Length: 175
Image (cartoon, rainbow, N blue to C red; front, side, top):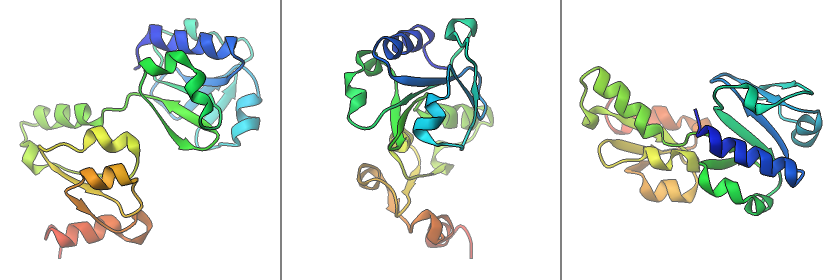
């Protein structure tokens, strides 16, 4: 989960400045929002969005994600956003979410007493930047953002053009 107090500060600022917001109080594909504005603004159906009119984020012990509906660069007006990890995947809203995937990768490798040199990661967006480490092989998809391609050990084809398959062939992991 995210830093609880920082999330509450951001949500309070959203309320004060009339930004549309939603939260995920657990690590699932559902989000809660206090009214229909989030759905009307974003038209996003990737996650199950539940309107809960009396939504108070303080009623939850943890917050895993916060969503703020706004077009770029409106998010720059949110002072509390500076203290949380976030990224934009859609033009209509930003995701505030834990963004260092390398922490989870290291925990899994350590749990199995593995070697970081055996790890291969694939990425395409800014939220993958922290995952691209020197300890393992980092492969950017052809459709990746430029920052990620620059940090990658190898750039493969787009994800919808057999990028992972082609990278695995390139490195000799498959015939």
